[in-house]
Image (cartoon, rainbow, N blue to C red; front, side, top):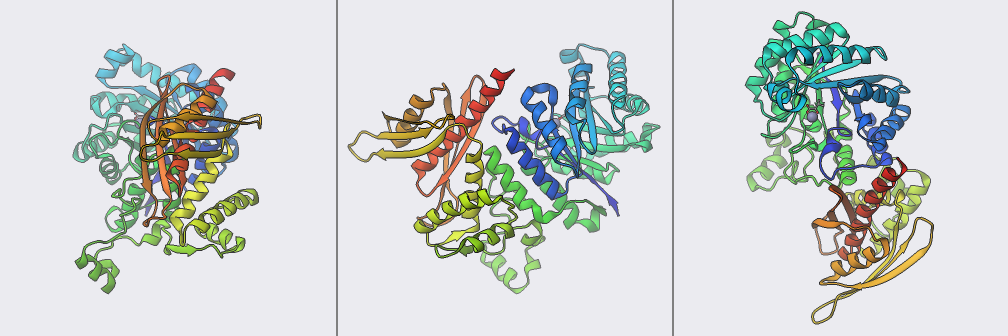
Length: 508
Ligand code: KIV
Ligand code: ZN
């Protein structure tokens, strides 16, 4: 069976989703998990975009050795040189050059004709080829470009040394039938196409990204670009887990394989959701909380008699933990560590120590500590390891006929303990105002949501917020059995991200 190359762009196109900003350590953490998942290529970022992007790509290129590490550059000499600089230490590196090709983009954005565009594409691929063997080229907005021009541009870039040609549906406009026609046309009309891998990159504006990608694979494309949980620009990109599980579950139809260790899917999806703050809808295919749950009596009856009556996939194949009730307050450090390992976490001794004391605190408040609680607890630990300001204590007084009042204690980046108090319209408002008095970074709260992670009155509450500052969105998450504490943690998380970005800007 032929193998499909899985090109993951969570750290580049995925991170372009407003509010999905990750810091360098978080990007490295995701890259390491993508390596465990078995992706073939990691698009680690767009180095010319910002010094932060450059640093993250360079770090990933140094540290993550198994997959090919790819850096994106627009068709510009400086961008290509910078991208190369970022990935040159990778064990296996790739440069990905893109240039718009549609009449709309040429007329309004590039203000260039087709002949000039073709020449620039050829020259920039040749420049990238001067640095390394593995060069990918994408004609941006390919699905709104005349087929004849796509054939010409692909022939020219292959001649100049491209080894992969990627066909992006940049604006999520195409349909499976139409995209199939384009891919078949490319195989029939580009004379040197057999020398390269044909790749596809689909966006989900019409909800067709996965369908379009799979259609292209049936026509001979052998690389698919996708993201974890389908995050990305606007409505997002084709979702990696959906493509991989479709290929696996319907191997009889597609007759294609991948290198993905599907038992790592659940964990990778949770990690990306935790770090980006993008919740996974319960009905999301493969990784949604309801994806393997059965509510209807008839379905439950069928499942009990024979699981395949209503299940086309085994939950264990994506690494979904089989047990729900796991540990309690009498569980020891050893059982705790062993269980985390079973869930796929490899933490340092220091992380385990911190997570264990957090676990003991939760176990004191909750009778049952489930896998979901543990995942949330580990995520909470990961969030607080790289923070500038640390929430030391929060205390509120509120209720009917009282003025909500909050006292907050923080530890500053210099280790100093600072405290202040504020009044608010409600307890969360009072807490946020007290934090603002201490941190003093202007921002606007644009979104606030709270959800229970597990069932029951003693469930851990998870708060997700988004704040905006100078046109940029920052996501924050916090979890606790006390939702006011969770709200304070979420705000600190978002503020710390904002401060990290501001700090990086000042360094430049
Ligand atoms: O959607 C797109 O066209 C892209 C390119 C840079 C490949 O992300
Ligand atoms: Zn894209």
